[in-house]
Each structure stands twice: as structure tokens, then as C-alpha cells.
Image 1 (tube, rainbow, N blue to C red):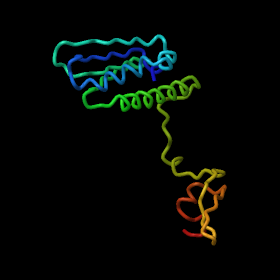
Image 2: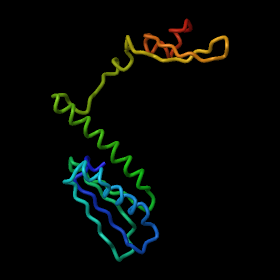
Image 3: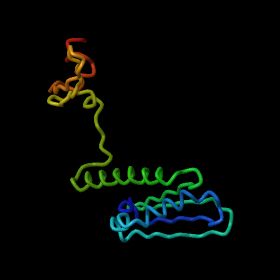
Image 4: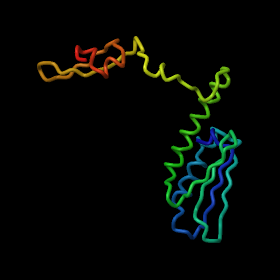
Length: 152
């Protein structure tokens, strides 16, 4: 998770009963595996004395900053959002390094083309009631429209 971040700031009042998400997220950030994934990621913990709600602010490696209200967002949800955005950053970087434009724009006509050779796994019932797995090299679009099975 930390490999996508350059900075994590966790703010909370220790006496606030709503700090569970902050404490869980802090524990995840301090885990050995997380630290090893990006030792350069700055982790700041700000202990507040006012009634400001618990907050987690992350800065991605591309400079984008995002703040989360830790009173209503579970630590696991924040972690999942970071991983999803991080994977998008990795994909973007991969395309840029390959000299491709980002974001990738797929022409409308290409979205409706069939893809020959796509394997489709389907379950079929035999006469004994057992299910068999069967591979087909049919077009994926044919599979969903039913034309591969003699229906149209």
C-alpha cells in the first residue's frame, strides 16, 4: 500500500472515541511489509487537543493528495481505495513508458468487435445430474448472445 504513497498524515485526538480507523490505519502503515514496500514514504502522526474529527491524508507518488474522514471511513476501505488508485498509477506509467497516450481511448466501433479465440468456460449438466466443465474457443460475444449454442 505505501509503495503508491509519498506521505501519510494521520490526525486525531487521543481522547476522541472515533479514532479506531486512524489506529488501525497507523498499524497497517507501521507493518514491516508496508514499510519495506516504500521506506521513503513519510509517516506523520499529529496528536490533536481540539475537537477536530480524526482524519487521514495521503499523498500519492504523483503528488495528488486525498483526505479521508476517519470517523466514517473504515481503515480497510481507505487501504482498498489507495491500492485501486495505485494500480491505476502503475498502469498509466506503463503506458507512458511504452510511448502510448494516456488515458487510452478505445473507439466505439472497436468496443463491439468480436474477439476470436477467446476461451469460454461453461458448465453443462449431464444426464446423470453431474456437471461437466467444457472449454470452447467460441467468440465471447457469441457465448453471451447464445448464437454459439444454436440459439439466436
